[in-house]
Length: 361
Image (cartoon, rainbow, N blue to C red; front, side):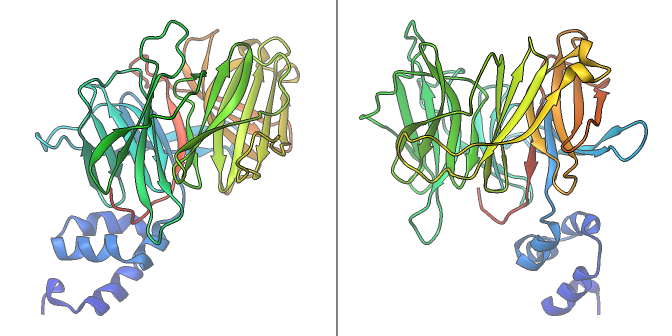
């Protein structure tokens, strides 16, 4: 009897004894094995260790960081392959990425839109409306009041208003494969580009109106926007959002005081403009670090899961004009810079955590 003829339960037993790294190779052996591995929750649990992914050079890379040595290092463990639907041998250049529930909402360099599950290697290409603009703010989320999650895409753009306030808001629904306009929206604010994060199916952006900065949330169940408060901000020049498990994180960076603070909250279920309950997670004083003269400018960050002592940041420096990965100790004065010598273009790298899922795109 050949391996391909073995019963499914016996194949599962064999596959379960193999390392996770071997499963991807087995999936390409035949359609039956591919379906058995990628659809079986037992194998997904084995693969559910969070991956550190980074968007750079128009590709999504797996990245590992070793900071338990005297000279910390990073390694790119290959790219996740997003294939062009018309030319299967070509990879797609990815300009932006938004993650939600194991799915990646990607905008491409040639202005296409796709929802991608890298674990299942499945894609859903979304037809733009004819008036789509490159500077649209896009987010992926889902309704929380149904037995199975109903996924939607949110699109906002300013309609060329002089103050850049959001003028048009549209929803794409997976179930109907169609776009519709939200008619009752009056935001009167500016959404900062490339700041959105997803938590519990909803989206959070940095936004501003006149001289006030705040969090702008969108509930995909009620299809309503809401303004929420940020942590106390005093002379901070850069604000960055991230998520960790069910917590929302805000990084505040002061260029003048050479300080960085990370605040956290899990009080995100409120639906009013009441103040969120923020607590400080870490504060870093770069004046006490030997590299403070090369003070980094943070574009994205995450808390390195399983490595509580370190914060892994993707940063560009005004002094060096080079992208780098920074590692900051959460409970000590540990700090290290790892320059990205391999970057070949201007694209600002975006780092994020990804957990494989069986959600279909």
